[in-house]
Image (cartoon, rainbow over all chains, first blue to last red; front, top):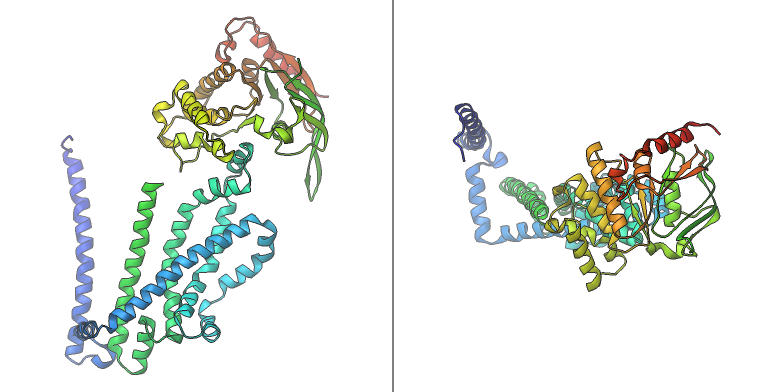
Length: 265
Length: 255
């Protein structure tokens, strides 16, 4: 490769400086926040019993790791979130396909789907607990309820936007509606499915935590509610920190899946 | 010899809540084996509808369309259709795009796969077998689309303005290309176009349709004074411009 010109080198250096500055500022902000929090708690500026402190959280984390309870709570929440995420993907795609196959059905169901989609799903959670009992299945259904209607509507809309000429091509090649589904509609909607997934993973977590608030004996949502009731706010804040990390990790996993599928497609 | 394709008194209208729009009226013509027919007419005269009817995608309201003496609905597999755009699927390789029709008709036999390979080889796409469609030029893409149709070995090819999405220069060479391939494969073809030069340079007969509702105004047999006729060379035939003027007048006259 040729050596870049002086101007190009200066441009690249400036870009690099900018990137380093942003990264450094991000880390600094976090460290500063933790430091101020810790210092304020240590000097009794804030009540550590209510506001906790980084060191108390680390201690709580260590204790809960030692007795294994933390793994159980995190594991349960993770399992429920991942399960409802995949079930939404499956059920949502299946329903969207059904709607696409029958124009009449979709026309009949459309207003109901729109209402269900705009309904605040947290309102359903208490009902689900009563109907299905306080168990993991209920929490998974609660997680699904947040994302599933939006998934159906978005996917169905996107199915309908398939290029009519591509559909005609399949028909001129002697294909049926099933061929159109498998050869055009589904493959052309994989990018859509991925972008819906990126939203859904966050929504599933929201639904699961809401479910755990109301009807669970384990999981981070349970830990938050229980902790706030018995004034163990270290638990509450630790759970929130862990939820942040879980949300981040799950989102990155979906993005990773996106990159992988791009290469594969 | 019996004609390959016969249309008898075809009528067709579009229906919308606002009313009925007649699109085609009393269309009758025949196409012989190996013949190349071009259909021209003002936009909206039902040219594309006519192809949809011949292909059996829609049914005429009255009249009959026979392919080798059989109603076209029973002979769907014998017609190949080329659309305006190539519609190669980006999520498939060139090769898998070409096999699309075979897959749909469950005809992926070793002989047919060998045919696909041979066609790719003959028409210069063998090296791009495993490429994505986006890596091909506009002309190559259209050639791949034609192979996708040819691999099904149709008796009749329907071409719905297959060059109109290309820029002018590509268009001339692709038209030449496709015209030569069709002659070489000894296929019968019906081309719909609004480009008069394209129609005259490719066709053995040009059918001129009137404004909506489309009726046949005239059928002009094209006899260019030249040997080894190809679409591109046809354009320099001495009597090319005579045909052009004749059809031009036909298109612009009222009644």
